[in-house]
Every structure is written in C-alpha cells, then in structure tokens.
Length: 331
Ligand code: TXA
Ligand code: MG
Image 1: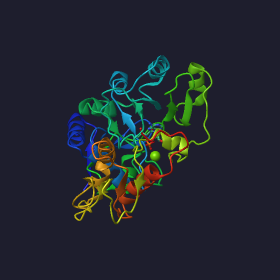
Image 2: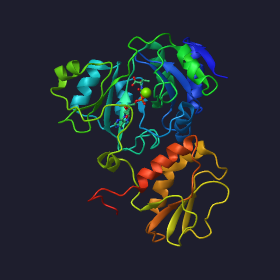
Image 3: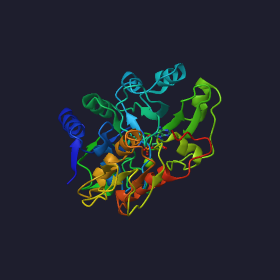
C-alpha cells in the first residue's frame, strides 16, 4: 500500500520520517514529481531503481532545502554561486565535483566523481527537505520509459504499492524536468539536459554554454564517459564459474565459489538483488583496496540473475569489465 499524505505539517513530518528510515516517498517539485530516497543510504537508492524498474543505474540528482546545504556536498565555484543565487529555488540542476566528506552514496552518483545538486521550488517540498536534513535523491516518479508525472494521481497510477508514500503537493507548475548544467569546469559550462530554465536565460548570466552531442536521461556509454565513472583498477571477468587463487571474487547468493578465491565480497548471501545493488560499489572499492595485500591480478564475478535489478547490476559490471581506453591508468 502506498500512503497518500497531505502537504500539511503532519503529512510532511510523516514523509520525512519515512525518508530518514530509508523508505521511499514521492513528492511534487515545481518541475515534476520526484521519487525520493535518502541519497546517503545505498539501500534506499537501490530501492528507487527497483521501484522504477530501471534496467540500468544512472546518476541521480540530490535535492536540498538550501544552496548552503547543497554546496556542503560539492566543490562550488563563483559561477555556480551566481546561478544558484539567480535560479534557486528553481528548475536548475548543477553538476559539480564531489566535496571531501560528501555523504552522497556512490550508487546515487553511479560512481561518478561529480554530483548533481538542486534546490527545488515549493513550500511543501522545501519543508520536507529541511526536515529530512540529508541529500534526497529523486528521479522522476514514473516507471522506466513512461511519462514523468506532474500530479500525485499520476504517481499512484505508476507506482502504487511500490513506494511507501506520495506527498500530495498538488499539480506541478512547470511540468518539465530541470535544466542540467555541468560546471565541473567553470571555464566551460556545458548543457547536459534542456529543461525548465532556458539556455538563453542561462547564457545571459554565464556566457556561451557548450552543448554536447547527447542530451537525454540515458547517460551515454562512450569510453570517455566510462572513464569518469568509478572502474576498479583490476581487470574484471564476468560470469565466472571458477576462480583463480590470485583473483578477488564478487559473489552472489548462498553458494559462493570463495574456497578458491583470495578474498571475497558477497553482494548478497541470500540472493537479494536490491541488497546486491546497494553493495555493488562498496564491493568494487573494497576488492580494489585488497590488491596489494593479496597480490590480486583480477576480479571474478559470479553470474547475476538477468531480471529486475540484476539487469542494472550486470550493466554496471559490464562497463567495469569493458576494455579501458588507451592511457587509462590501471594502477
Ligand atoms: O526536474 C528534475 O530534475 C526532476 C525532479 C524530480 O527534480 N528530477 C529528474 O531526475 O529529472 P532524473 O534522475 O530523471 O534526471 C537526472 C539527470 C539525468 O539526465 C542524469 O544523467 C543527470 O541528471 N545527472 C545526474 N548526476 C549527474 C552527474 N554527476 N553528471 C552528469 N549528469 C548527471
Ligand atoms: Mg526522468
């Protein structure tokens, strides 16, 4: 059952409690309804992908109640400050380098060294974000491939029974997603997705904005993009049915091949795909960190089921296993 909460102080407090406890709450912003989960809890983020039925992970926007809260998580720059002053709260998302101590989980950022941040408009959503006091990851609250919802009843049509609650904040004013601008290089702002703030308005403040070849929710898989994702330093071997003595093992399920492995990280001993998604990035980082201790030459990955979140996990591991572009430093 998905609870429909009114945008009253008690409804907002209930929604905040659910989010802090790791549950999922959809809420209206000025653009579209977002499917919110605590960005610092990988299990909540895994649950977002599961509820949306997404075949692959993609980096999510972290939502905040204020620019101050957002800029604690990223390394800001004068241009970002200027855009935030002008457009926040509002339909603009800024992509900036992760700050030291950033608490957004790797899964929410799909392993990228940058984070997308935004302060949405709307009294109820801002009150909710203030009460949660953690970054809230929120993609549009529709099932994968469907239209973004601009009303609480659209959300229920799509996600009834798959999320804990929807905070009914009424219809969305803009009805179109936020504009996403990459400011990781402030000398070359780059439009990643057109949206609620027009390019002309942006260019009025920051000069010409580069428009890369792609502009969609589907993060491109080009090698250039893959480079910027976290990939382990060790080569990755998928669908392993045996494991060598100098291999680290990413296991899945109750019968790992760990007897032969130098060191093992089981994504989910009970074979739960949501738990596996939540533990994927920490596992890659852990095994990578064991490289010298165990003189590892590679990572072997046991087969992962090809359904539900298994598809997204497989997709991420395939990217981790893909040949690295020339010059990619494997140490
Ligand atoms: O209006 C909106 O932005 C809505 C509401 C709910 O806030 N949210 C939304 O989220 O549309 P989502 O997850 O559907 O879109 C996130 C966009 C994607 O195009 C994604 O590739 C991009 O932001 N993005 C997120 N983090 C990024 C990063 N670190 N680098 C580059 N692009 C990023
Ligand atoms: Mg979307």
